[in-house]
Length: 130
Image (cartoon, rainbow, N blue to C red; front, side):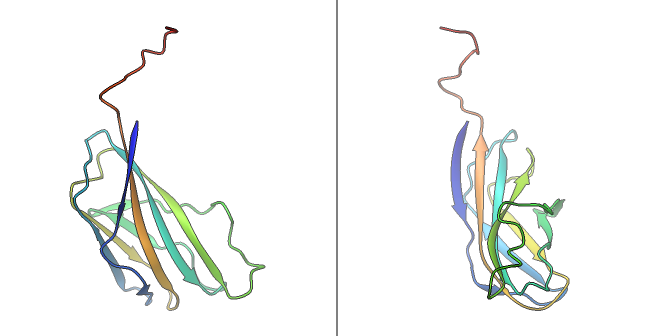
């Protein structure tokens, strides 16, 4: 498996209730069998939602409700983290639109990063000892 990382075209987007925030990730080298991981980084006060609605190329993607670092409720200054969101095969295209929608006002989405995992075409291992 080969992994390549791509970055969105914008950053530090303010969050407004019910308003979509769009990010473009273009020039991606992906196959139909490529899977991926979105890393969505945002900052919000503790009493605000940390589970946006996410679509990738018009398809809904499940946002995890448990992640490493948890909700940071004991941290002064609110939550800041990069949440990994798994992407299934077949959803990643050469040019991608990632759309986030939060249910409440406040905070910012700092970055969206797309990690693409593609099956390697060289050096395949049969799984048998050599």
